[in-house]
Length: 79
Image (cartoon, rainbow, N blue to C red):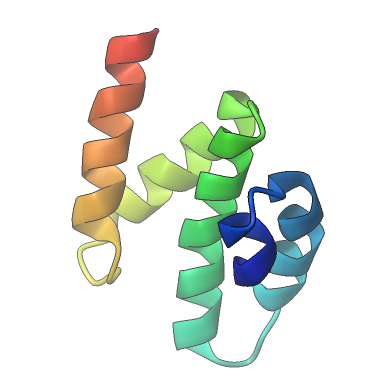
């Protein structure tokens, strides 16, 4: 999923990242969650990215919390 996202193929990355979110590894699930939100944004699916970004930004223990807050702020400016 990450390689597809890095290669500007967010639509191809989305199903792979969704699958990674079912992993038994919490670390992998959290990474997948963050990158899924980014893939949705890059795929012009803000409506799907926004709830994920909100969830991540409110989770004090999420490793991507601060980045999610920044993205959420910048997305609000675009509205």
